[in-house]
Amino acid sequence: MINRAFDQFRVKILKQQVDKHSRIYKALKINWRLFHKDTEKINRSKTQYFRGLNEYMTQQSLIDLGISTNSNLKYTYETAHQIQEAIKKQSLCQNSFNCKIMPPYSEDFMVPPL
Image 1 (cartoon, rainbow, N blue to C red):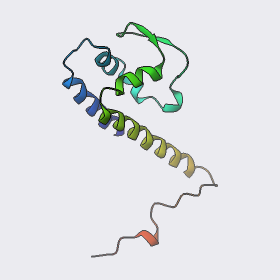
Image 2: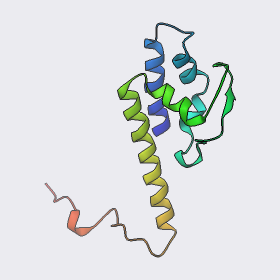
Image 3: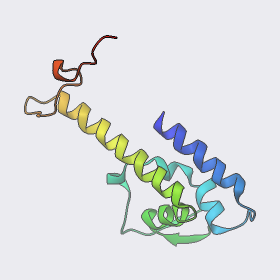
């Protein structure tokens, strides 16, 4: 659901682009899977060839190129990844016994009846 919301916003930005042959358009359009990759798994040092852009760069520099077009896109990308990391951390925490996160439903935070 988070990725779908980010994709909808990414496509909205793509449709606003006038030049369909620009580097930024191609970075956002052709390499869309890279924007869904976990931040831990993004390669920041090894360069690779990206089809469509016809150049060598790191995965992180391609992501930076894509999200540099719009500040709202950058904010949406970062927020989506923060939410995914929080969900991942929560699911890992539920499987361990040393978790110190407050349970989602607590009597202290119950909404009073109307």
